[in-house]
Image 1 (cartoon, rainbow, N blue to C red):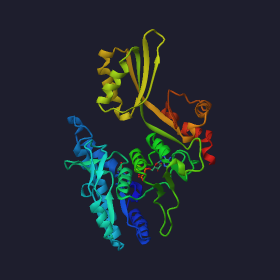
Image 2: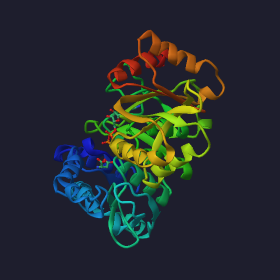
Image 3: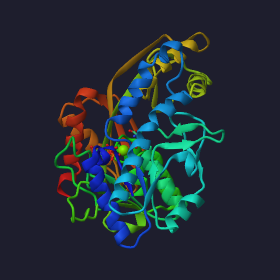
Image 4: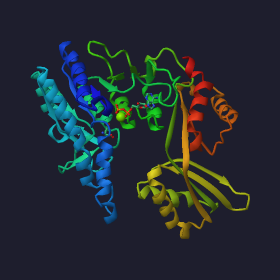
Length: 410
Ligand code: ADP
Ligand code: ASP
Ligand code: MG
């Protein structure tokens, strides 16, 4: 069982979580619970590190001490939940990442789990104790605390489930995965089932209900995942939620399953690039060396002979760094100009049915045109189409696409 920040936001909600955990114990199950920091805590901790003067001294935000600070929020909620369970008469203890251990690599701030050694945890559970695990954190091979990137408690939970050989129930503030973010479109519908592949695309394209890495892990290890609401009253069951599973297990196939959006985008435009081999390799090589993640890329020939224009997107936080890097290769590459626009959003439609149906892109472009939304960049994969638009039209575009594919009538 995994509980997110809003689910453990105060002691009353922690008691509610303890009741849900107890219900599983009463049903005869052994339980490992992963918790996030109380709502807002991680943001507060991140702000402390920003304000510590580290940036002024040129220290990267992903410094190892950043992880020491931001991982502390989960320690608090794990301890509080274990205490609450004990007070209800259920044996429980808290586990920090290093105590299990959850071994992570040393890319601080966005570490990946290398390995979990579940023997001690399993022995405690066999002895009848609920294991309350601090999410979001692991320990590097040389003993330092590492965090798994924002939203990383989902990944802790799926990794623990894989290590223990069980399923993973993600309890959150919505009662499942919806056709789009229910905060933006009140007509969004809950999906009874969604395939790993579609969920992976939804997550990586901005639906933050599950961290992308957690879906990757679930898919790789075949962990059955359910997304459920933790907001249930005493005695009430949490409902069916959404099951994330293999595509074959889904009988009712849809062409489009969901619409996702991300405002964490910046577009970089390069004008007057020489049109010869090696140019892209130099530019994207320099960005890769600096660990800048590039998403959409388009290049087109300019009207004038022998030059081309190129646009690509990066995360908002990386925009300035990306521009600096591109400028640093300007003398060797020899392009005319570079511009950046971070007032953009990416809106995507996702569905495995696109593999076998035509006309999905046409419907998307038509729906956006009808609302007067201009498309700046397009990218596609087998099961998704993404467009980059002016950020001001994000909600309008999401709602228009949701309606265009009939998702409000599922
Ligand atoms: P937690 O703190 O439990 O990890 P998050 O805030 O990380 O919760 O994720 C849950 C939120 O994800 C929801 O409140 C909802 O606004 C958002 N969300 C975005 N897209 C979707 C979607 N397609 N289905 C459900 N929730 C979504
Ligand atoms: N508390 C961490 C965050 O806010 C991890 C999580 O909630 O999953 O990113
Ligand atoms: Mg989350």
